[in-house]
Length: 262
Ligand SMILES: NC(=O)c1ccc[n+]([C@@H]2O[C@H](COP(=O)([O-])OP(=O)(O)OC[C@H]3O[C@@H](n4cnc5c(N)ncnc54)[C@H](OP(=O)(O)O)[C@@H]3O)[C@@H](O)[C@H]2O)c1
Image (tube, rainbow, N blue to C red; front, side, top):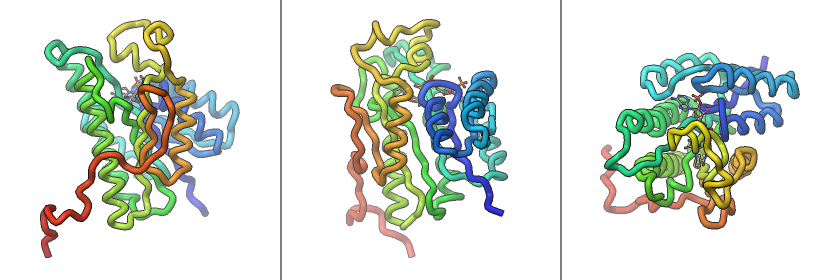
């Protein structure tokens, strides 16, 4: 019997993750959707099943800013065969470094950096030699350009960009079969604005001249998924979406690298 394969999406209860789940459901992909708010994940599941009753949607509620939950989640998913892993869970913070609230920053580092690294590493460990598998990490245009008043958030996203590009390079060098990719959206109308600014209401029309919808960004993600490129970046100035090879300098086979020990 052929085993069902699943696409895992963290941060699926809202915004880009939510629309990405719907976009893959349209392609009849089975889904494992992850976030803290069960009611939002339940309504996503109902929405998907109403249109695509043959798609299997599994819900996992977990706070990924707590390290032991991250390991437990991955252990719980070992019973499933996975095809693609998408790390979309993440949040931002608008504040100067001197003024930023450190408890929020701690959580942001745990989620945006630690959880993403641990989940990516375990997925790559288990699936790097499996044809057709993909890891897609959601960075930001702020993971390629430093944005004022969002320095620490951008630093987490520079980490996501460099870690993911580096991992893509590593797998290419070692002839891994998994494709590793980074999606870097610019301003997108989601719950991001509310969370990053600690407010109940956030008006994207008033606060941005231009932004994308989360449906548009989910379409960008599908274009990246369908391509063999590593980076899908939205230009912060033009809002154009472009697929490309990795952007950061890579030392590759430089003679100045540490020698491989025999
Ligand atoms: N919107 C933008 O302008 C923009 C631009 C560039 C990049 N991004 C990136 O895009 C990704 C998705 O963000 P979004 O714009 O879609 O924002 P969003 O609507 O706020 O979605 C964030 C998702 O992350 C989940 N999440 C937050 N904290 C979590 C935790 N501790 N444990 C588990 N899940 C958690 C949220 O679910 P729960 O609250 O239910 O847990 C939600 O599903 C993020 O990585 C963000 O940095 C966003």
